[in-house]
Image (cartoon, rainbow, N blue to C red):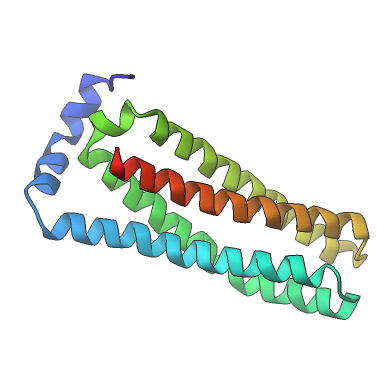
Length: 166
């Protein structure tokens, strides 16, 4: 088990005490965290499903899907921002537990992988739009990133449940 630096524990002590003695703070912070994940993950997984489906269709359907994806990204990114901020508040409320948890750090690695996968997805979308070529190799990349995204979203959700119940 890793021990957090005492300076970090000390700096976060007022928040941890407030959070621990409040019924409202845990409710709001947990709602923001879970709600943001439902929002971001819901939009992402739904869009991933559409990506998996549309890969087998013609260029017109794929072009429409790319346009639809543009409107989805702000919701996913916004949800992730709220999830990260609320996650930091959750971390600060019990820094000793989270800092020393291999499940917590595994979840953080999974989130980094999710962000990298999302970056590859956006890069591939832009490449398809940029040259106008709906090359099968780029759509295979989107197909792969969609599968990886779904797996990561659900694995992150599982890690979150394990973390809460340890």
